Length: 88
Image (tube, rainbow, N blue to C red; front, side):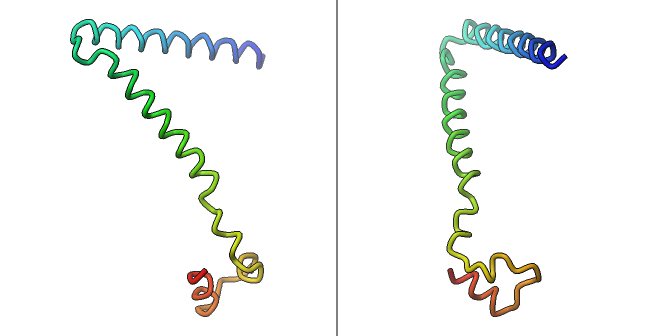
């Protein structure tokens, strides 16, 4: 069942991509000025996606510098602890 679902998903996705490419080709044939624009925008979007992937993985990197007593405390932090946390 899983293999069949994967196959069907790939078929649907391939059809969608082909349809989108046909639409882009139609627009580019109608307006030569924008030829290649969709490809360039896609390339920029993919570059930004790579950057966002890295940022997502690293967004908590600052936690390595926080003392375990503060970082792993099960209760709310005191005002003093909040100050220590903010300064680091």
